[in-house]
Length: 243
Image (cartoon, rainbow, N blue to C red; front, side, top):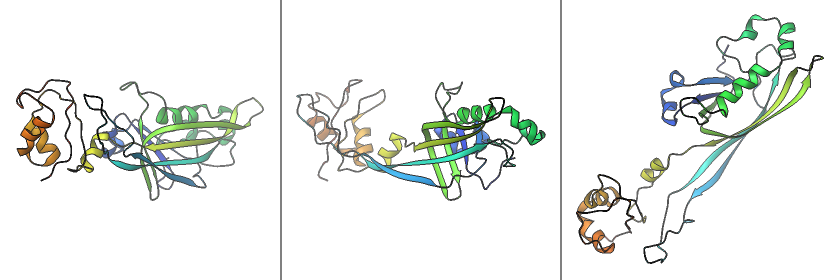
């Protein structure tokens, strides 16, 4: 049975489903034994590394949102020798729960390893992509994707069945680029959007400068013959402007 005190990893087909909770999940894998430690690291992403070029080949000063992506790494043990009463990868209904430890000893760890892979790295039928995951343990909560999974079998039964394994896993935070852009919305950031259906210069000025009155200035900067006719797929420059 699931325990609120053990680290759990829940899979979701879409990142947005995480906010709706386990009802929209693709399954949960709960650790049999909590890890001794969890390493959280933060890597800088974004910033001024990318330098787009203008139509004439010159460099355009570009600022992009800078943020730190969180990563969680930890190791844990799966044990089916009978030493530990709980079951690896426990679910609400688990075949091991109805078997004495002597019988579960012979089953090996195949079912638990399979469940772990399904929740972390195997592509889902609905998306053909690995799931997004939500790691929860105590005060630790991380939503992202599994970037690394390692399994080392360390003990076998006399029948050659693996009954103990050491698992290492790394989960990287997923950050929606559109959310980042909206959080770091600022008039001093240069933007170079690609024109899509429905875009208008006044609307884009309203989005980037919080005021549509700059559309004529932007048309002048981009040498547009008319602000009313934007070409689909065209890239326009929206630099910082004096207000």
